[in-house]
Image (tube, rainbow, N blue to C red; front, side, top):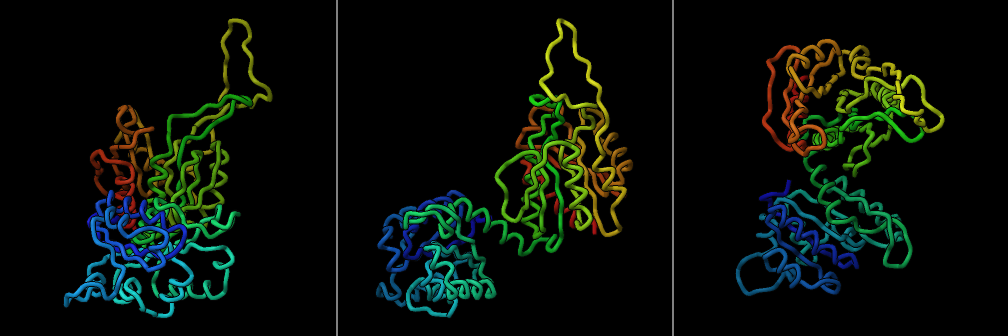
Length: 397
């Protein structure tokens, strides 16, 4: 998201200003062009020399520094594609909300047409002050993206809301929200399933599969990047993407019930989970013990077919997308499943290769639709493929 972008980082006088060093470093690693501006009070917490070394540029601290005819703050304002203000104190928030430009950072911001993101950090009582609340609301109306402070241990010695989120979290949220501003699925509600279901045999054993849930999580991120309201129903607990509501389940029956509850108000359903077709007919109340040298016979019964049920219940305004992991005759099996399940799109992949599919970071997929030729996308990481899938879903309606 930030590669080759001109990013201005404005640092203000908060004890969490030390996190600006890591933030700048992450942007540089992401191949962004980074410059830093600092308020006078920010320099009491972290030196301009540190941020100059990390960014590779002199730091803007004085509106009247130098003896050239160059209007520095105007040149920097024109240069910036994106501006981050972090940590943002109550004082800085008040200035920006009320149009004050009395130093180098605020004058630069006021003259810029760049995308603007602000990350407040302060004492919890200050954060809850009506003036701060009002000023943050004004900035949001003015087009600023406001990163909510995190809850945690504050400098005052107790836990509350007011901490500056970690730099990685700020960048991840900002990237998604910036992409979402021009996303093709803004206003859409999307339900996605992920991971392999578990079918209990007894209190300690279960039947499952090799699904890692990586593709489902990638789809959830790609959907959020496109501006959708995303519900992820998953058996795998990974770090949640900003803008995604996670619902944890374990069995196919639990996933079926969660999907049936969410689907009626959804615009799009994407079944990326590896759902167990069968489950034990009975659940043993105690651990199953060996009985001599004889084997164990399990009686299995069919689970609810989530994709088929959703396909049967969908309205004319709803889209259903399924996945099929196969080991042979991938296209033929996929086309049969597309028709049988009444899906609008089916993503098939060959999981017989150890380099793609389950547990791998990469995949090779073929996209099937009822009225178009099969389209195979070359091997790529799952997030790249998820973004391609979302682009094609956006063209279905």
